[in-house]
Length: 201
Image (cartoon, rainbow, N blue to C red; front, side, top):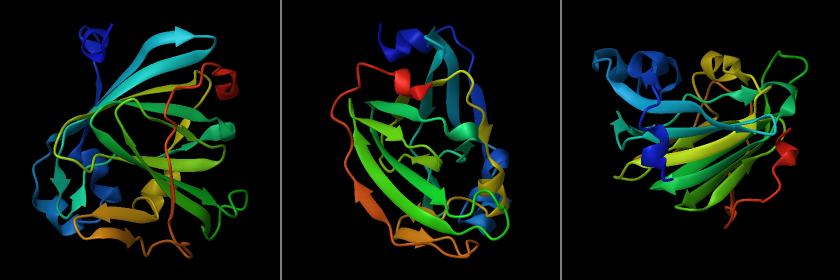
């Protein structure tokens, strides 16, 4: 069964511009733009071994000077997540806080990106917040497996107006709301989906 069949009778959660204004680089542009739909999250398409299978659809678009992206979140209790690109191309940005326990000044100790094409996969490591970007001119469809116990936490991304880097038409731009941001690392995607997903629990 392909992705179209899997989501055919499933109602998505829809992320609109109004939900995203606080995490965008082009805030002046966002103030004047209509509240259009940005991307679609089809959650709980399958369940297996305490894991949930979702599909996200992100049409191509620029938001001012920035490429369309997900809002960004962290996982409570350090759950990992597995993403696979079904169609299109994705950039995954992942960032890890140095002082997550104190919750005061937020310093990023590590940040890296992975560019993935169709049938390539990416694992979100424990303790990393993440954002998914559609940098292309075609629709991006991606699936994810994640623990049903995993709770998404958006607080850091909302507080600091996005991830520590924005991906724009001019390339990567640091988010100045973060106290310290290291240089970006660039990693390679997995060429196949792991057969054993028990690590996600």
